[in-house]
Image (cartoon, rainbow, N blue to C red; front, side, top):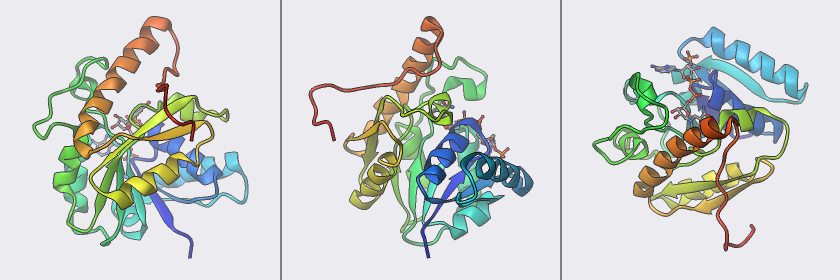
Length: 225
Ligand SMILES: NC(=O)c1ccc[n+]([C@@H]2O[C@H](COP(=O)([O-])OP(=O)(O)OC[C@H]3O[C@@H](n4cnc5c(N)ncnc54)[C@H](OP(=O)(O)O)[C@@H]3O)[C@@H](O)[C@H]2O)c1
């Protein structure tokens, strides 16, 4: 049986972009939503776009979580705590969770160019607290914008992967490698997610000032692969 990648909140901009890239690379994707019907419709549109070979299904977030081997969290910061509480007893031990969340002030009506202070230090460290033992976590994709993911072209972006768990880091690296043009970089411990998350607010500001949609990050002086 092929592994399944759940995209929780996969009906949204970032989640559907990641779902598109993963399914296009041949992964079996489960779109998760608060409404199964919405997820099914997103899955249908993705299958239509990618073609008959695409393995994309839609269901509610708990069913997607229960059925997956890897779960990518793509809901707004304000929805993360309620969702993870709802999923508390649903996770299979051994699941890898990947958090893309940025605690943008926009999530509570503030500016998209600012991040909120999070008691744990970052959205990812908050997520860690709410996952059961046996589910390991990496933070990644926070600087890879939805508009870039939605296109067919290779992306021009490094993806920092932060985690305290080697297996989760390895899986996140592998998924980044499924997106043409993206280069995964070892961002160190999960606590470094606080730096990565705040860079997204900076990128949003750059998008606004330069009137573009796809500002991303490239680090220099590192091996190319
Ligand atoms: N957009 C980007 O370019 C980008 C880039 C990097 C990282 N991210 C991160 O990715 C996450 C999603 O961003 P987005 O722009 O895709 O957001 P979005 O489109 O506003 O929301 C994504 C999905 O989350 C679900 N959702 C909305 N509010 C929720 C709540 N209160 N509780 C549970 N689920 C909720 C919705 O799905 P249902 O209604 O179907 O449940 C929605 O389609 C955020 O944490 C963001 O920081 C985004």
